[in-house]
Image (tube, rainbow, N blue to C red; front, side, top):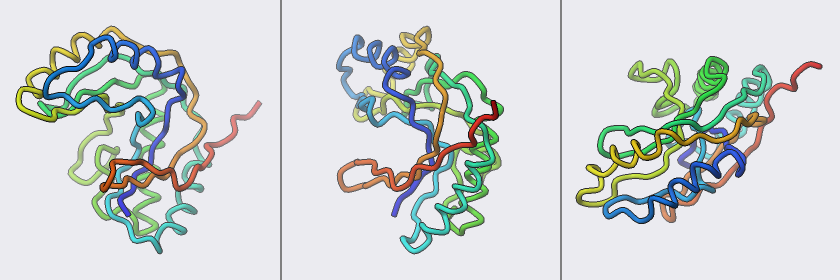
Length: 192
């Protein structure tokens, strides 16, 4: 099972970015991701054995329960090389980075971090956590050259603030590109 841990922004949080992307229209060589698939990856786990999922779920529940819900918003845009166009995440980034590190640590402690937590704080390879939502990918000739222009056109767009209330364990189905939420784990309840 190919798994990752994520936060999913509510529809109203992605709508301004989705509207701006729709206005850009079809771009040759660029494949847009539909807004219902947009998420903020906390930890990429790679291939995980099905029998490891119960211990992974317990470890993620303990990790998520130790973190207050961060307040976030989509803001700005950029590219990862000539392959990915993304929307940035703004808001309580220190809390988000701490949550990502805890999710990656929980996965490793459950024996489910086979490929490392790509993009997470303290991940394999020492890369810093860069929260984002993937909007599009280069999918053909010339698509990669279009991504910086698209990022520039989306740089001013931002969405409303939202509070992340849960962490999701998601399975990515390579056969049809579908995402399936296997488990939803609430973050800590804020004290009054």
